[in-house]
Image 1: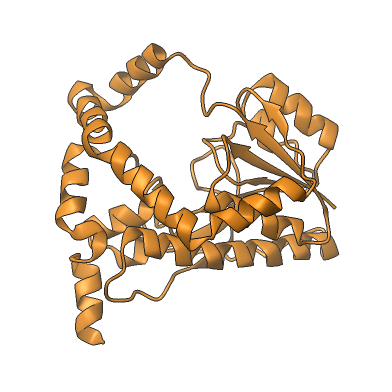
Image 2: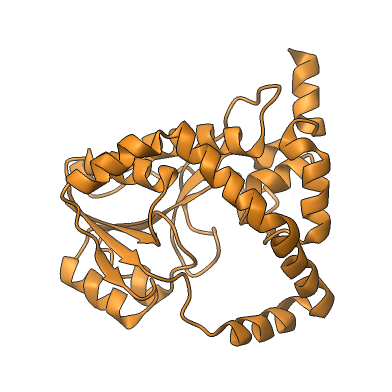
Length: 274
């Protein structure tokens, strides 16, 4: 079985952990690495965002990213790198022989050509944005995504931080699902949630969630290798589906006031239970 893992930029701890686990499966693993997340000019992205969200919501998101978000994302990346022991993972990456095929962007024609050459049975989106049909349809058996949230309950990005600030513990977890034309709407193959522990933050939750999800991914890949298919974990039809996108300034401020989760209601209630 051939597996094509898709990443964007230089991989950090979570991505390297995922790639190493994929390479442990009895398969022929390939990596396609995009240089950029998007090749669309920034002014076009801004215009599109204003049309979608409106001026004030777009301004709030921009201010939140500039004043708080960029620093918080860098902090989270550093902590996750420590938790995943990124130094040893980088040593493995340099010696593993998985020479990535570099392309401008994951939806670029060059990426399509690279995947066609690999002819994968399974595509795994390890990092990056939304894949378009001409990319994920190249998989003979399945295109898989690890969503850090419990789909279809919560779709989009930053599901764990959103669960913290909106007191929605049922959103905190991870899902492995088939990629389709929607956003985190494909058939669910696995869904799990971590044990909430007093003192947890968004980063410690993300770490434990990712470990569980990657172990599940390995089991699913082994199932595809053995049988050519994987059993779907059908979510309850009555579950309401919520979509959340990037934080605005207000959400970032509330997130910090909740001490990145330590003072959130969902974790304080867990502390009382303990």
